Image (cartoon, rainbow, N blue to C red):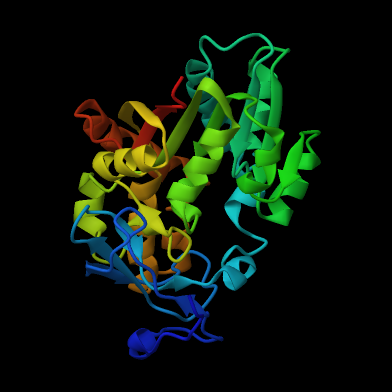
Length: 328
């Protein structure tokens, strides 16, 4: 599809700087262009461009996605060096890092039950290697861990931790054959331009019966209903290309040839915190107020955790967790 500058949003720009090159897209599940706009917003977090971005919902399957979205040539621009996933460390995030480290380690180990002592585990979109380090520190010593990330900055940060990380795409690993017992895709599928192709490539890397755990934002939540017109944290404008419900995540998994064992929800405070933050930024709140709502703000994260805990108890937590399998 040809790259172009989008004239439809030219009157809605804010800030300064050069506009992004964008592409028009269709639903990655249905393959049709029959979507209705549901939101517009900006890069409230990093201000990487002056563009306004449009979110649509497919009229057939209900998939929520960004249309138009940044061209592949713009990825280095929309993921600046200060991007949080490139350096999620104790030095930068303090108490929040230490608490999340323990909680995430517990989750990871629960997904690894039943794996052999020498299991091969692959983290796709591993960022700076946060989850791989947890598996190394808390998992079985015989597990063979590796990661892959398309961003060179992220891959380099992970390698500095002594991890085996491939700089590139999952497709570049397919020649290694069916060798992984478990793959994890944590907060990554929403960033890619073709989720179905990504899942199909991961399927080809799994041993028969091998598992893939996907974690991604959930659009079937109260925070989406409250903030979904512009400020919802899960939009992460313009870095989240696709956003899922249970139904659409199951649909794209099945189209990729994977069996759906379970789709449940996970508690997370982040979208609540960033929804408020985005609104504050948009309305011009003072910086010291905005800074109280971030990944390094224990108070707002604790409040968001308590709030989302209520909805998690009702099966409407902020994140989806899908347990998928390669058929035997």
